[in-house]
Length: 218
Image 1 (cartoon, helix red, strand yellow):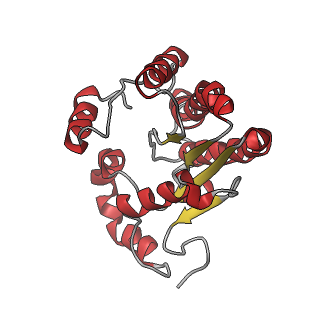
Image 2 (tube, rainbow, N blue to C red; image 1 turned 90 degrees about the vertical axis):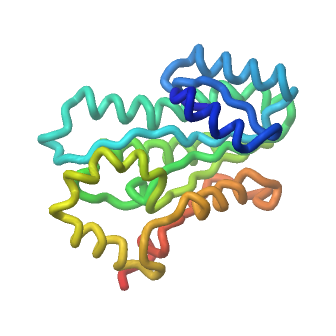
């Protein structure tokens, strides 16, 4: 599901019969209702929700206008709240479900120039922990994946501006137990674990996919 319809339909087609695409703006409650109703109509149940949509802003607090700060909170934090609410009825009726929040390394530790993004990702982690406590007795698990990396398209608009600081950026990624950023496949594998019955009984946790960045410094 995405607001990028052409790209979303293309990915679903590449995956094949095992995938469906839904047009969805995560900030709109009516879009969530439509996506959930459509999915239930086609499949009869919803076992997993991955709250993955996000936007990024890089800049000092002085260079982060209030409307930009609110936009990041709306997509990155309110979006998962709306998505979680939208699937609850179906998951509760089944007595089972797994909700996975995509947070970030910036939702575990602070860093300069990402105040809005960090706030939104800390927020979604807190929401995950509270809802894990609230929904566990309904058989619904809620966990977070905290990635040091992700979709290159989200970072692309900032790449040119970061070029003068490339040495510092690379040093930040190399100063880990496993150097470099997390790949999309590594992040997806962590999501699959939390989505599957392999993690039955696991709820309210943060899974850093960060090469040990939050464990210490090399």
